[in-house]
Amino acid sequence: MMKFETRAIHIGQEPDKATGAIIVPIYQTSTYVQKAPGKHKGYEYSRTSNPTRTALEKCLASLEEARFGLAFSSGMAAISTVMNLLKAKDHVIACDDLYGGTYRLFEKVYKDYGLEFSYVDLTFPENILKVLKKNTRMIWVETPTNPLLKIIDLKRVAEISKRFKLILAVDNTFATPYFQKPLLLGADVVVHSSTKYLGGHSDLVGGAIVSSNPNYYERMKFCQNAVGGIPGPFDCFLVLRGLKTLSLRMREHEANAMEVANFLSTHKKVKKVLYPGLRSFPQYKIARKQMSGFGGTISFELKSNLAGARRFLKNLRLFSLAESLGGVESLADHPARMTHSSIPLNLRKRLGISDNLVRLSVGIENIEDLIEDLRRAFTLV
Ligand code: P1T
Image 1 (tube, rainbow, N blue to C red):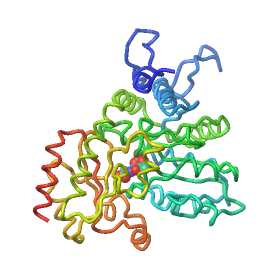
Image 2 (image 1 turned 90 degrees about the vertical axis):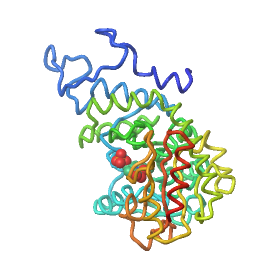
Image 3 (image 1 turned 90 degrees about the horizontal axis):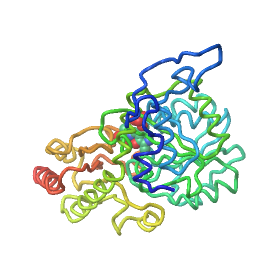
Image 4 (image 1 turned 180 degrees about the vertical axis):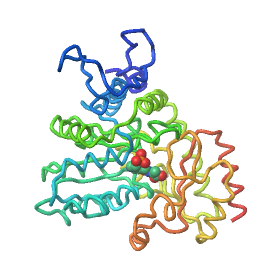
């Protein structure tokens, strides 16, 4: 098999048969002319499939070493389609630290359709056994988690999942397939917000699912077409373009994040740094084992309170205060007031998503400029 960097540039992206165009064209079309009713060239209507999307789906599947890929209009559309594998009264065990939008989808949408959810700390996989029920059908894992960067041992969770014939779904957004391949560790379905590192340039919203299980794939493909959360061809083109440099970008994100994490660790105004690449991080060893890199996202607690966090964020110049992560430019987020505000206050408190928690998406700018920006912002806290 070709190596990752080569597959990112070539799989699904053969030169255009009609013209020789080296880049997959943006097939900006809703429909396809048929010779006779039902006689077509594989494409009938662009909700069902589109050649630019097909190219992206092939490439995504290849990068995760999966048989099948599906591209979506957002990460949430992808997650919602994974939930379509379930039926009313099914029970899902999810990790307790989750992107706020995922928690909101589960609690405020799918609960109303009869799905049940339990949230447990999956850094201790045996916690699954404490909440397992007769109707449990799925385990939902983010690793690293958003925003606390917890690392969940996928091999151990997969063993339990297989023992009880559950579906193991993993949100691989933070790690990307460059650093982690959950399907090879026993996951059944992997999802992404391709808005983040896959796209990589903060210029699109998109999602993806990959799986090697034909039954799950067929059902999700069916539901995608039935519900319609598909990406447009231009967004598919942008994600494909992003994938070509994924390996380069991830190496830079990680190198910069490591330096920022080390800088924060020694800073007197910082209480705690959460980054899986730090030896002091509780799940450092598991991260080393199941990932080939630690990623570009860091969270940390300031010693001061909400007012101090507000001042710090206001004083940043290079790091922009914004939701999202994974673009080439550095961003800072206040999870409690921004990305995770849909998680109830008492739950946020229990998890440790406090008012002095800041999340950084470390970009690929020059590291000296980034550290200088942080250093300056701290002096004004
Ligand atoms: O925003 P969208 O492309 O729909 O993806 C949702 C999503 C899914 N999974 C994870 C792990 C995510 O982080 C996200 C989106 N997250 C942010 C916008 C954020 O700032 O954390």
